[in-house]
Figure 1 (cartoon, helix red, strand yellow):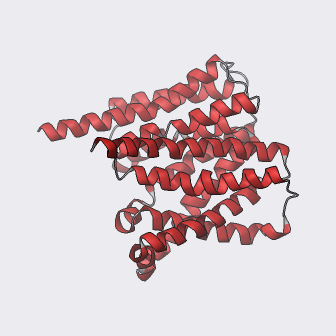
Figure 2 (cartoon, helix red, strand yellow; figure 1 turned 135 degrees about the vertical axis):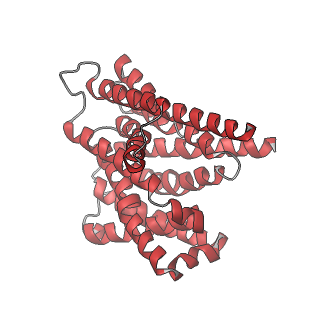
Figure 3 (cartoon, helix red, strand yellow; figure 1 turned 180 degrees about the vertical axis):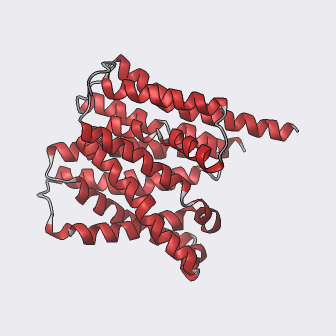
Length: 305
């Protein structure tokens, strides 16, 4: 039991760490190579989708094929592939392209706050005190992060901020849309097929064969890392952790993504992070801890009753 929990924690940390490193690697590609966000998103989803679908067919053959036998689920999977999976990938890399990996990854963590607002309107229930606290933390943190504490100026380009906020919205859709599909077919088939569908569509629309960058060996290594380690293995590690630990624990450990992206961006890419940005990042990431604490407290209360 103890070994299983340790394994789950290691997997839950490894996935976000790889995502964070992948974001920083993508920023290095955008700034030092002739690689565009459109091209990298297309290739990343296409190759990772192929590999994950093959992995799913080998390990979860029945679930991987059954989703296509129900036409309603198949249509919904295609819908999610564009609105959830492809949108989250595209907005994230565009936010990195116009801003930086650290800010893009931290702004992505505004997703819990957006979910709180959505659920309040959809259920017509006033948010709990802990939700209001989370919203206040997220709003204050965002202001500090994007202004460096100087409220009259923006510390990042407007396009970087806009794409960063769109990243949070798309991450919300990515979280909320596939819940029924995930419960019915499992995570690996749904993630694999949605990546493949999004990758094929993006590659065809963008015509990646006509926009092939001029590569160095270092470029191949960086792209290979983003595709294999930063996408396929990162998803497999994080999803695999859910077999051993609670989803709330895994979501808290997801903070290693912005932490690793910020650390590497500061050390290797010269991104400036002063006290206001650091406080803002802590407040935004802290919303995940607050929500997870409230969830675990509620679960504990239910068990006692």
